[in-house]
Image (cartoon, rainbow, N blue to C red; front, side, top):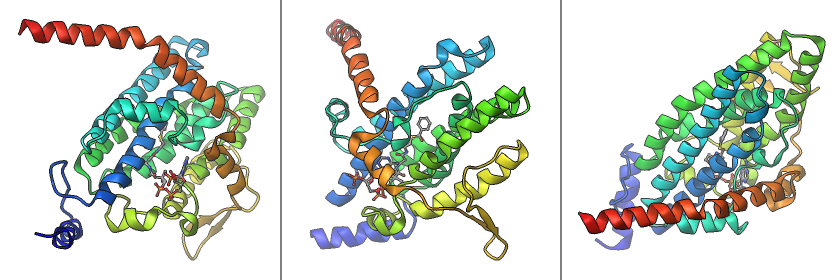
Length: 310
Ligand code: BYC
């Protein structure tokens, strides 16, 4: 078969809802797009450990400390699954890590904001993991097998993350006036950056058309953003917290919540590396990588020794 026929067969398979596996023929562009998106996702999980890791020692009780520790550990695991899934596309993990540490690779904008109070741990679980669930439930049906299977497992864990976050917020929102204020302040700071997580509006999203044609993405950035808003507003009302958007309005006809303008200039600044915490996040990742050198060396030496024995 020539290239054109192979492409036709590949697209027919996608159209028929078949799953593409690593050894199957795929267009180079599909492989490249997956490596781009999946590696950014893996990096996001690993960088995503930092804003919360920062609060493990300051969690207000042993129960909260254990839950947060487990959540941050889960995120390391998610990074690992997705790096492994990306490696099935023929790229080495060391190369992907180098792209992250050199500042060349992107990771989710959301992790470039600071975590200023304990309520931020609640709101990250509720909003950020909530947004991740909306995005990843769709990706669990994506056309690339190793990615979709990783998403199924990750979504299960994200559900716990979201529940622990919403529980923290519910307790603070029903607590003392200071606690309620802390919860509202966290909601005010994280709402808009969370909406940005879904990526630029569809009209400014250069990758969406191709990704949707090949069923890597099954829904657009704007569709998923809307779904998140529709799910989250009732949850905010249930705990008497206010979403910081004066333009929020329920549209009876469409059954959707309409929301105000997102500051896309801020989003692109953060993506370009100029967010409040970009430099700090990369500095922390580089330090963690350097500090881990001896562990990697020891693991390699152990593996080598084991190999020569068997
Ligand atoms: N931040 O054409 P577009 C998590 C970039 S982990 C930074 O729409 P696409 C969690 C985009 O890369 C969250 N950059 O792109 C972890 C592209 O640039 P390049 C991560 C962004 O791929 C721990 C350009 O803008 N989740 O949830 O069609 C604890 C144009 O965008 C962002 C994933 O990665 C952003 N927010 O759609 C808690 C999920 N948005 O590469 C939670 C998988 C866009 O062309 N990824 N850009 O230079 C996706 O679903 C899609 O890649 C996106 C973007 C929806 C994010």
